[in-house]
Length: 349
Ligand code: 13P
Ligand code: SF4
Image (cartoon, rainbow, N blue to C red; front, top):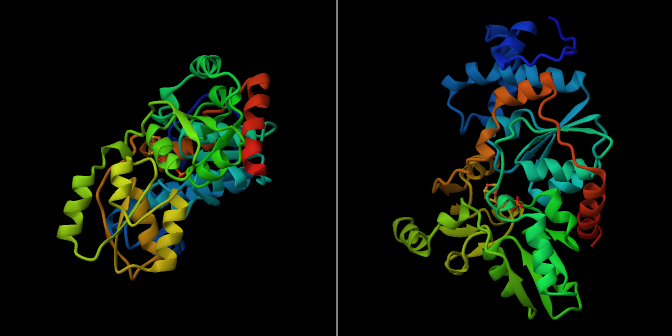
């Protein structure tokens, strides 16, 4: 097997990589990959495994040879989340873990702002994202120029910025936050008013946990804004006894219909701890698959809202990303220094 790393500059496809590495589905691979299949067998049909296993084998070999670490957000599909990743979690956990990674290369299975945050915390490392299409409707709702205008209109008011933003926007901010620490971060300022960007719904949900006046931006998550209170009420009728837990990017009216709200990892921990008989996770659908694997006694009711950006990441483009070293995240030095300050202010708090 030719396991030498790719040194030439021409990009090749995932199937060409498999050919070069001489990896294909075989009875040997079936038996050596059995322990990985067992991890996901509750949610990945056996018939799909011969398609996934060669890519998984190649990615696991390459990442070792290249000394690369794979970070996966809770919304990644189960074969990515459970079979190839080294670090898993919500935005805050991934950012914290990214700052501790010892590998030379970080490959981000998530969206662009997450890869940028990893780069900010590892400017001397190569940070890769497998698809440049993996954006985020919140991140694209606001620019650095928009933030400068907000500051001009509201002089002296601190700017708290959700991590779902570009480095350029973080660079204009005082501090970042994630959905798991947003209220604490807002409350950490003495100022009576806070500019909170860019998620309108998260801002309204945080406003309920603080006495501060929040100046918001009208960005929305295109996945969470789709959930409605009527839908939740209907689920409660059709699924008696169901516990409803929702991400705070949902509207305040959806949160009001829910039993609990928190970041993706906070939701996961709630299920682990409470072991409800039946649960509805009001968030992106892959997460229920990932969590159901570890919680076999919980019945997951699955409303399916997919994040089209998270779903740009596939086993094929992860393999291509490693082999071709594409697509590398670069941030100019001045923006990076100022954005890092905002991220570090959050991590240190
Ligand atoms: P978490 O920080 O809760 O993982 O959220 C990230 C995200 O993009 C949710 O849509
Ligand atoms: Fe962005 Fe929403 Fe997708 Fe999260 S789920 S990455 S907030 S579009």
